[in-house]
Image (cartoon, rainbow, N blue to C red; front, side, top):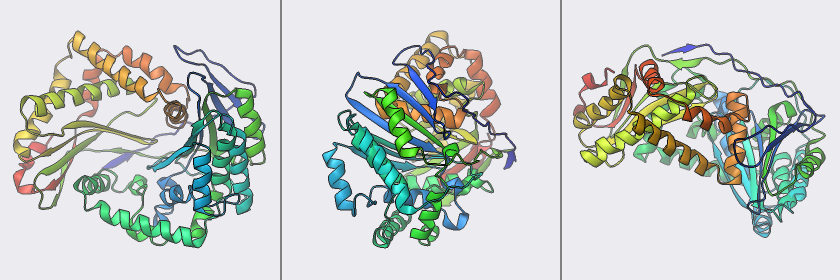
Length: 476
């Protein structure tokens, strides 16, 4: 595998007043950049009495030293524990219940997501909570050149908005992180990582990552490894958080039943003392495969797990919309041909994995007889490449893609994540809002061009019995 250099676009915020661009539908999006450089994006939507608060910042497994891989994910678990205002996890959980707050977190290569849902009237208290967290750590912020991004997100009923805003802020800025809780979270993560290999899909995921990102910085897994996570302690976590506290790394997104002016006032109060810093994204090579390959791992299983990946365009690329429509069409066709018509597998599907400096399409299947199943799947890739999708069929795929996309935007946290991802992946927070229009213009020729350009030199990975797969089938 080779890596082709790509320049990562730098997003510069220039306006100090709210900017309200037009949208095809839905509530308007407003943006403001505070004097300290913090970008604030607000979608005022009173259709539901809910508010989501999201802080996005460049962070994740790519920012971690290899020997401490897993820091971002471990902090994800510490986020929901004690801080300066709430002395232990029991107090934290009690406060979250009182606010009617829903919370969770996820980690991947480029980003970490922490989200809470609460009521609007608790917003200011949440901001206060976050400000206290920073003071508790006595953090100082310096400029960095780290490449990845994270998100802290809170969501609650609108009546509790200000309290939730403070709760999220406190958790980000002033976590107590006592050694006892760090030790417990670390041990839980080490056990979870060891168990990951026990699950065939988990083991396949590890094998795929090791194959397609070999020699690339993305080989630094979001969750880390049992060995690296076992080394982590409070000192490493505190240093990790110190790197994040500069406004050049942060974007605040709030969506829901709250006025933009109120959000800005609370943002100034909670984050106004943060330094701007000098962080900017660094250029990173994108994976590129010069030939097809097959990697196998023998395991005695009732079925075989196969996945094949190929490089694809990422958000912001001219052919990204065509790629997403084509991938959706491929997934629908694989389900029909492999499962519905032939009953060769219960779980065929298409993959599309997007990262800041990598995008990959692919196919996945569990199959008792891969020699019978794989030719059907590859035949659908070839059909996508060689035969134009009929007009009515393509219109149906585009309509289904639009429906799935809009369903993901029905929640306030879905909208907040879409705005943050647009800014951090494509350099434009409006990007995914515009993507639907771009997808509606995709033609059959666009789909064919995508398939011909990218669906080649597949990297096949198999977990199961290699003797059941003819290697010649993987020369695609």
